[in-house]
Amino acid sequence: MTTDAADPVEAVGVAPAADAGFLQHYGATIEYILIPGAALAGALAVFGIFVALFGKNPLDLYFYMYQGAFGTWFSWQNTLTRAAPLILTALCTVLPAQLGMVIIGGEGALLIGALSATSVALAMPWAPPLVVQIAMVCAGVVGGGLWITLAGALRQYRGVNETISSLLLVYIGLAILNHLVEGAMRDPASLNKPSTREIGAANMIGSIPGTDVHWGFVFGVVAAVLAYVLIFHTVFGFSARIAGGNVRAAKIVGLSVGKLILITCLLAGAAAGLAGMVEVAAVQGRANANIAVGYGFTGILVSFLARHNPLAIIPVAILLGGINASGGLLQRRLGLPDASVLVLQGMIFVSVLMSETLYGRFRIFKRKEA
Image (cartoon, rainbow, N blue to C red; front, side):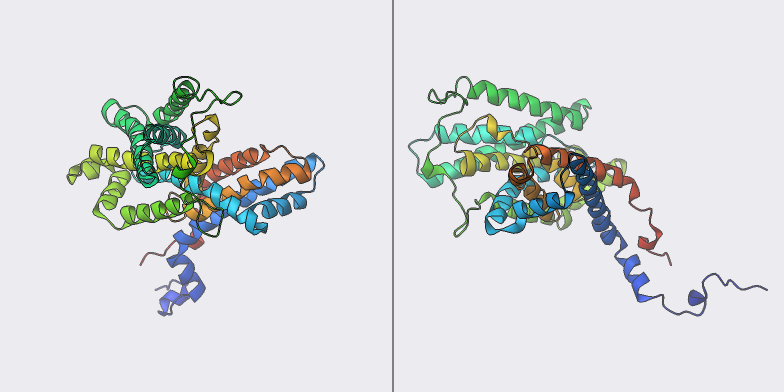
């Protein structure tokens, strides 16, 4: 008769070490933090190497990035202002991801939301500012929501891949914006940069008291919290996650998958459309080509870095908003092109995608079965 000496601790009934139990119990959570963090650090390291090849000190690069993003109160305000649309456009990817869908058309919904909000504001010159602002919010939300719902409908009723259709809709939305801004809605006074007429200073949503951060950041945080509650604390969210995990099982238990897809896409597009309204009513004051600055595409990166968690996108959006905000300082102090931060974002995205294969491969984070 032999005894198993492989695990004498379990043989005598002694509890495993506290650290091991902690890692096994919270392993998934720790893994979701460490792996994206390592991917981000790796991208920064590779970017630093490229900068060093051009004769610049990587330590200076990291220092000025920090200074431009979080070093001063002015930097913080600039960062939070840039984070606002990132939170909202990231939700355009986060919500459909619960159903296993990959929507990357947040930029298009942002453009349509901005155009819709501007059109409503220009059509109501007689209305009080509060009424115009509420109408702009409704128009932006509805316009962006219907735009992404179109991608969901193509997936549900025609079998069109939602990733491709949502991306193509971005270019259609951009073409519509340019056509109207340079044509029927163009302000004759806008010569070098075609734009619509201004919505009026009274109709702007302004900033949070005591700061230069506009209310769009508050809209984004509230939207992220509501999305978290919807996904993890409602029957609708539970049904969406069930359908995302196994469509056949969802249909067997009687869930209307098509309805879930359309409603989720509507909410996702509404968030991105709200971002477009905020850019018009808080930053630009009118619709023009400058609204398409890539917030929708950066929102995809925010969503993947946050592992499609609505609450996690808030700090991630602030981080990437800070990276965007530091571009000007890098240009002035190190002579790097302002677009160099876009190169860094591309490296981060590739690094995050490569790190997807690492989840579940570390035994130390796996929970032991009884």
